[in-house]
Length: 380
Image: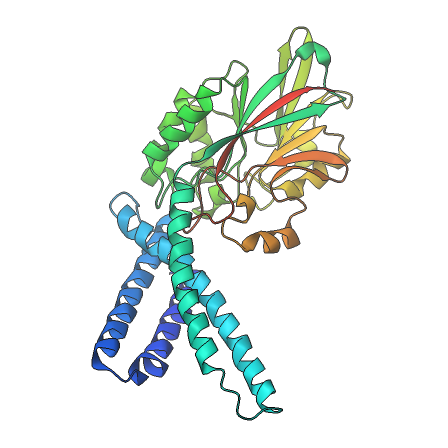
């Protein structure tokens, strides 16, 4: 079992044992103790289910027959996160109570802590249920992007940006088909897919990407790898699977789009965490590209925009961040990435970062709704 999953199991199960021993066993009434023990037992089962979901995402377990188990367990991870936040608040209150007692010995902080604990538990469940509904259906967003360097003769360019579907442990072929149908309904000129389309191997879930064959865009459908294409050690087969369903991989390469006598150049780079034979190579991606050409760069992470900006790209599209996915992770993402969501600037170059259509881990999104981004590029 992967070390990260083992650590998660040990920490979570240890915490549940501590709760049962230090909290549930001290409750004074028998019905309360029974209810508490049942709740702990259910939590233990859900924790085991979460391990199943994570193993399915890593390609260790085929997801088809365990998707409902994965969904239950991975959803529980979101609840665990909010319960941990509650424990953090309770810990702070306990410390503050101890400090206040140095001045006023009679102060009893227990009633406040009990109230906070109740609100925290209810809030954790409510936030998870809300997040399940929020994550179920990606919304279509529209953003106007005016670029002075874009050739006016090319005309407006409608781009559908699809990222982070994460088909596999929870999301199946039906979800992918829904993403395709929503994108096609916008009648894009071009479809760009910025990685993390799957979690698993081609042998296990390759069929889940079959709906990508239905994507319709007169200027083509292009994709680059994300970090999750590498996790199950099957990136070579995934890139071939894209070709099989009509998606053109931009693996450290470029493509020229021509319309009305004008040209737009696409440059795609593999994810920066990629391993051979699909490691990132920015110089190879820009090989043969006219430095004066209007260039749209595609890579999974907005952090890669720094390399594109050095090489004169006019715009980058990206994913990876999920907009934080579950509040308040957005603030931690900002510590690692120069852009979070929407249209921002990286080293002076505009970057559009999609929140992604799916979700990784918990099929839950809180204050970071999933999206299929429609970018309408035009000359300023």
